[in-house]
Image (cartoon, rainbow, N blue to C red; front, side, top):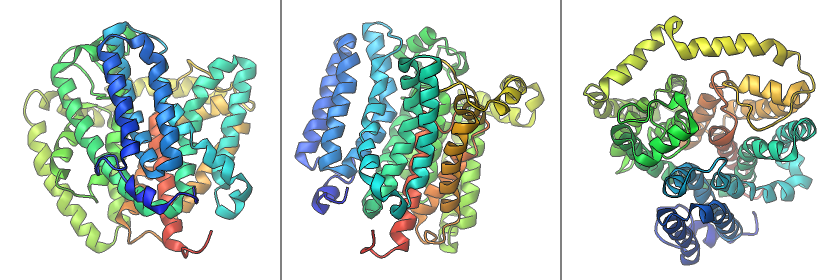
Length: 463
C-alpha cells in the first residue's frame, strides 16, 4: 500500500490510542452501536446480514484510507464476532449456520487486493512462498467443488485462505512495520485484558447466551453449560481457539510490559488455564523457551523478572477455589496420558486416518463438515499430496526464512513474533492450527516477523 500517506497511517496506529482520525472512528463506532442495538432489540435476523455487510464496508474504508487501523479492526472482528453471534441468537433464536460468522473472513479477504497488486513483483519482493501455499489451497478448493458443491467448498475454504492472505498483507507492507508493531502490541494487550476478564466471568457465571449456544451446538468438549462447569472460550467459539489467541497475547506481554500489563496477565493466565487446553499450555512453554534462547542477554534478564512477577500474580489465584481443583486436575493429566480420554481419542483418530491420508494423492477436497483434530491429517486429506506439496512448501520456506533470520535479534517484538509462530506450528499434530483464527495467529505473526526481518535488513530506499 505504498500510496498511502504517512500521516494517515500514523493517525490510525491502534484501536485504543484515541478516537482519531474522526472519520474512521465514526464508521467503527457507528457499526458497533448499530450492531449492539440490533442484537439487544432481538433483530438477529437483520443482524445476520447487516453485521457481515457492515463489517466489510467499514473494512474497505479503513483498508484504503487508514491501513494500520484496518489491521486493528480486522483482529477485533475475529476476537468478538462469535460473542455477537451468541448474544444475537440468544435474543432472537438460534441460527445454524450463522451468517454473522462470515464477518471476520469478509474483512480479512479485503487484503486479497494486496495479493493481486503484488503478483507482478512477487519474485522480487520475496512473497512467492505465500503464493505457493495459496495455490495449494486453491487446488483443494477446486477438488472440493468437483466432489461436493461450490457452497460447501467455498465456506470451508475461507478458513484456509484468510490466514495466508493476512500474513501476505503484513509482509508486503513491511515499510509500515513500526506502526504495525505498535498496533499489534496494543490490540493484544487489550485483547488479553478484555477477553481474559470475560473468560473468568464466563467460568464463574456461565451467561445464558453462552450456555444456550453450548446446548444448541452440543459441543461436549467445551464442558457443561453451568457455572464452573465450562471450559473457557471467552468471546470466541471454542476453548482451543481462545487458548491460541491467549497464548500469543501472553507471550507478547512478556516483552511489552505496560501499565495494564499486570492485571492483563493475571486474568489472561487464569482464563488461559481455565480453557484446559493442555497442548497450548505446552505451546506457550515452547514459545517461552524460544524467547529465552534467542533474545539478547539484557532482554533475557528482563524476561525472567517478568515471568517471576506474573507467577506471583497468577499462582495464588490458581490455588484457591473454585479454580484450583479443575486446573490441578488438568495439570495432573499431563503425567497420566494413558488414562486420558482426549489423548486416547486422538491416538485412535491417527490410527484410523493416517494410513488413508498418506496414500491420498488427489485429496478429498476442502468441504464443510469435515473437521479433524490434527492439521497434518486435515491437510493431507483435504489437499491430497498434490495440494499439500504446494501448501507445505510455501509454509516451510517462510518458516525457515523466519527462523534463520539474523536481522531481528535486537527487536524484542520481532523475536516474540517468531516465538509465537514456532509455538503455533508446534500444534499441528493436536488441532487445526493453520486454519481460522489459530491460523491467523500462525500466518499473521509469521508475516509480521518476516516484515521485521525485511525492515531491519534492507535500506529504506529498496523495494
